[in-house]
Image (cartoon, rainbow, N blue to C red; front, side, top):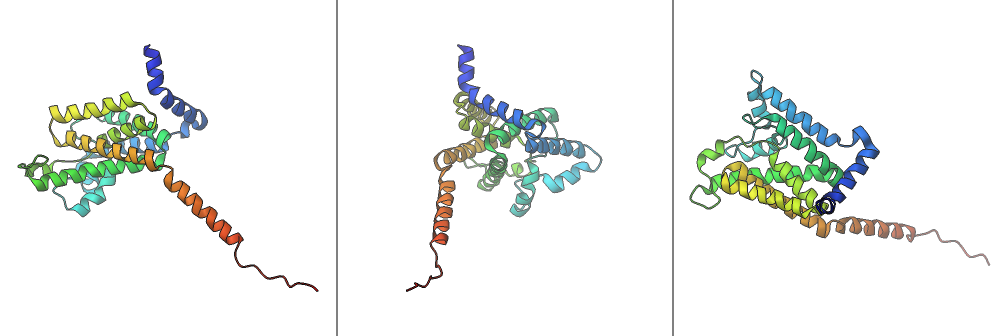
Length: 242
């Protein structure tokens, strides 16, 4: 019973990952490898003398910063781990989840989901600070100065997208439930950003399910129409011989 349930839940995912790794071997997950190396690099640098200041200037986002600076730093903020948490947990999560997502979703979609959900969390923090503590989703002013970095929102979002793509509904539901419980029991900025990341990931995954083949078909139709038009274009008239 348990084996059958596990196969039903993760059989598709395991089959996709196993086949990809067999074909590509050590070149299977270059994106996940690069992301893991960046997390490790930023972790080492920010613990060196003067390193925290450098990392702050290039990759640390806070809601109190001007929007332009936050947008410039957001791509790298995804790889800046928290100072007070063990980096090894982040490294394992990034490599495994980014690697599986890279295989199942593709590199472009993996990056798009990771950055979109990270950016959504960052913008949510800014909006919450602007609303103020008197609103339901508002934050006190001091939250605007909290360091808002790390790959956790991207990891959660990618896990949800992979679960939906592979029809691992129980796994996806468990991730969503865990994020909601975290936000309720630990009502801090990170927990709420994880919930936002889950919501955005769900919207992205749902839109891909509905419209995933729409634009490729449209582009294929346009290409076919252009080819037919080119073939049926003006031709040089051949004079009739009498």
